Image 1 (cartoon, helix red, strand yellow):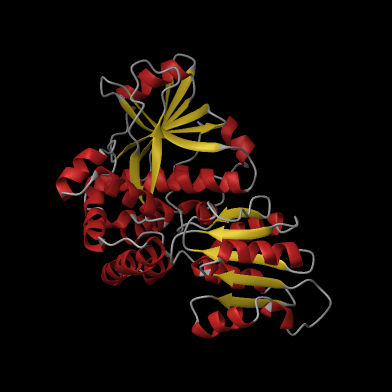
Image 2 (tube, helix red, strand yellow):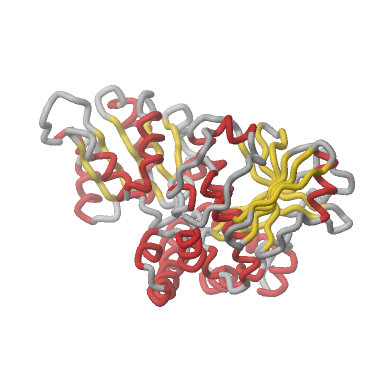
Length: 405
């Protein structure tokens, strides 16, 4: 679990402030393991999981149960509250805990969902917490990037040497996903068993219990259809017709998939792009290994690498990064654009094996005047092309993402 060290560094930075720390992320991404690794650095710590019946009883009988911790020294204790958002009055409870004891305890709150969304409604937790995320394992966690973020953004088209050092790891991530259990098993058969159970637990336990959805079977059917929808602007109307349910039902289910980190979406970029598509989002899966098409799976895997990176940069306070795609009404398209504070920084196109830049990269680079990368799922490639005053790099995904900060 040394791979999680950069997440521990984020926690170490955030805990310097008085706020509670919220750690959100997909189920089985390793949040509990990470929290226990963090706790090892504390002389005094307590782990509390609301899913355990005895713990529920303890909380109800004494809301400030953590005061009874047996201390080894005079340092401030770390209290880890896992799945506390399942407690019906959790927002008011945490508010009371913070207001009473933030000066005497550190609090780390874990949840398999977007805790900042759960915060909506009721008594606000605004100003009382700082949030960071734990994602499935990505290649950049294994690698030794050449640059810190600022230098990387100034050298998007740096002349990286073709490097097959991480190719095998990339291939394992491609076939087994970045979720720790199947990834470290190195067993495709185990992955198939794992993913079936994983999806059932999320749909029929977490989402059903917290959202009170009645049409669980139809929602599960929607999830099974999503691998065929990856990479194209999504039409809720078309999906609703296919499932014979309402537009609002599909919209709500897709929002729940995002909330529970089954999916994430990116929005179209339209600034300085004439006749740009501006309405429909693209949807991607946290678990790209369920996708049958190699080309679509590769695009989804690249999307996750970028999405994880920009969110980690945001969690560290480096900026306000966002991920988009570009498409115009002539159906010219570049898969991804990374922006900071609505300023475009660089584009990324995906191709399985084509080691010459796509025509769309030239079109949109001439409009936006930013760096462009075409990543391909083929080892040993690193080429650079000139487009007027701009550069386009065509590079193996395993090389480029091993250098992503």
